[in-house]
Length: 543
Image 1 (cartoon, rainbow, N blue to C red):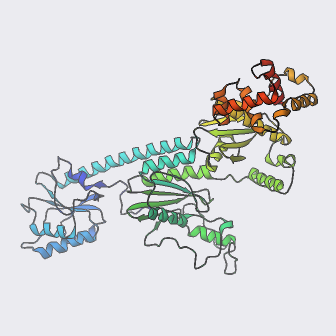
Image 2 (tube, rainbow, N blue to C red):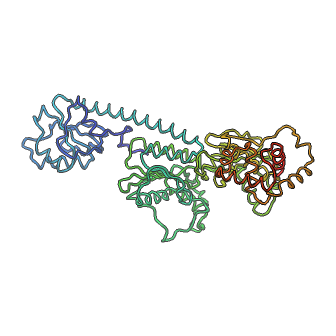
Image 3 (cartoon, rainbow, N blue to C red):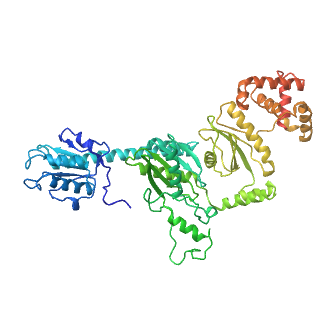
């Protein structure tokens, strides 16, 4: 719950108020600290203003309360009470009571480190208060604009092909610091922004442990050697925002005899965990947010200073990351889990395919633009864009199994190769089709290529058994070298282009030339002859 003593508007730097030429204010004592901020203005002529201050005020006084002959002792007590109440600064009005600011007051403010501002006779206290509220309104408008722009940029980043790194990069830029996503095991998955020092990195990782909700599989009996979270003196945690208390009398397994790791232990641990926590280490503001998917992901930020709206911006990023990293728990999820278990226990793909919800599927191979290899989170984002959670990261390529009834369209930032629809027994062949389609798509710079159905061709008039036998005999000289077979297939599919074949295979163009020359020698064929190329292409399509 927000502190009622703090107004719902951003504070104003004292220097901004002093910069108003129409007021003519002048600092005559106290530190010239640019970090001093004012939350509001308050006028009081009480000798002891302490009971009437909430903290953060610019206290305005004309010195009516100062008795005749007041010395250093009076002003020392007066200033010390303002400082004890948390006052930000003291504004002393010259005239009509005092012609100048008392020297003893200047000395007391200097000694206690309280900024003392001289208010000239032409400036009323009402004008000072009005100027302060104008500056606050401007700051509030700037804050709302900053938050709105940040929300828009974060939402746009979440729609990119690499949503998680993009969101973290935008968050780090908006906060002017570092943003990190920690996994359920506490590992740092993705980071963006300037890398802080070792002390800050370690403190941020420990702060993430304070808010990370445990899963039942990660519960364990605490021991004296377990690392403790940061002490309450250094960490401020907000109220849990993603946990729910059980009803009285229905706290399952929470009794004294409940075993460790029981549902009651999990519930009690969740209830004790805050949704966010903050700390300051080496002058750097650290904040950790538990993501709302309940999977143990944590967003951590480290910024050198805290600006208005930072908490709102980080909260928006936390919500987006919760959606991006959340696992969908549903009946289909249970079916996928069952299918995996049966495969591991020896079942054939055709037997477990019905558990996935379809008879025919397409295999999609995707590769992100650029040279960066996809991470698991980025791969999951591609699966979400294609409408499937059956995703596999295979080096620089992401493979997705998509139901036949779901359309596969272009995905910005990705190059895709799509197989023909296939039954489970033909999935290996569909995987090969998708790989070849992706290679051709990259070579031709097409965002998507399909190995789709085609009209009846002359090759379909040849009996399959005879066609296969002819293909094996024709390609026998090179069948023991997969590199030569793949190179020849790709080179022919790209009409003999050395450069595009090199791109598709990720090799040098001279390597392509050498392999094709080797194929020509082994096959004893003229690869410049279109009839030879046609025969070889026919054979390669049968393998």
